[in-house]
Image 1 (cartoon, rainbow, N blue to C red):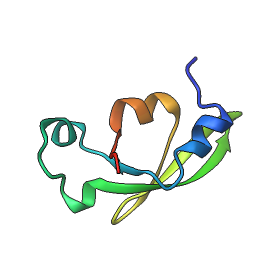
Image 2: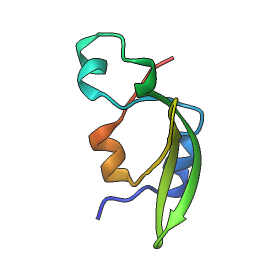
Image 3: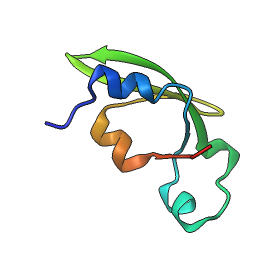
Image 4: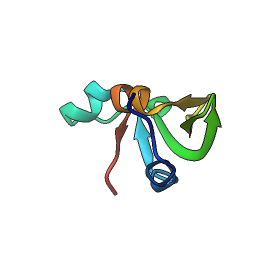
Length: 75
């Protein structure tokens, strides 16, 4: 199973993330509600997950979900 290591998850903290992968890849500006900030790391059921704060909600992702749903914005 593909899981975050602690080092991988911590390296993502304070990175900007876009929920809509199609907008990020096509060069379009994403909707403000689709942009989030990786703000934390937690352990759930012996698996490391990252926490992303979006405009109106907070979501947590394991590595597989993160890779499938999130695009990181380069600064």
